[in-house]
Amino acid sequence: MKRIVIFASGSGTNAENLITYFKNRTHASVIQVLTNNPHAKVLDRARNLQVSALSFNRIAFSQTDDVLNILKANDPDLIVLAGFLWKFPEFILNEFPNKVINIHPALLPKYGGKGMYGNHVHEAIVNNKETETGITIHYVNEHYDEGAIIFQAKCKVLPTDTAQHVAANIHKLEMEHFPKVVEKLLK
Image 1: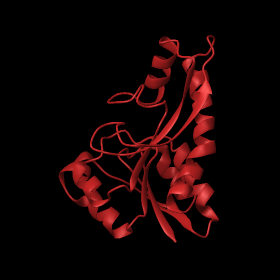
Image 2 (image 1 turned 180 degrees about the vertical axis):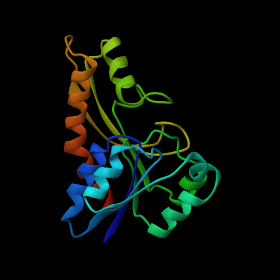
Image 3 (image 1 turned 135 degrees about the horizontal axis):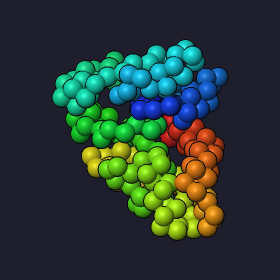
Image 4 (image 1 turned 30 degrees about the vertical axis):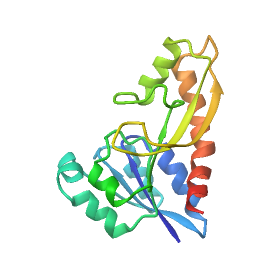
């Protein structure tokens, strides 16, 4: 059985989708959800689906081995960042080479980097009058949104679209593709 650990910072809709998708699979399951936000809705979503969920602070994540030791104890086959907003420490990445992936709400390399997440991305896309956008699933390296691209899916952006329209379209792409790409990586 392949083991998945999810990192998230917010509401956790992608985490919930992944947990639900793998709930009845025989080859993989989500075994842990970790968050840097003790008030994140993802904690409730995970616990409601009987998945262990913990929060941690910046010291535990990047200045000690606390989070690293949790990961080592869980022995994940894949670490999935699903709306996780902190830069991943190199010492953790080195322990799990090519096992940490992220989903980004734009077609990288466009609209990536520090501060480019969620509505910031959607507003930039609308303000720059882009005609298409999408999602990128990529490996995580020591730089924000610069790891090798695994998968991209696109959608149109209409001249009348607001950031909220774009967000809704991106959410649909995430729900449809993210679990399938994770599953494919684990096979």
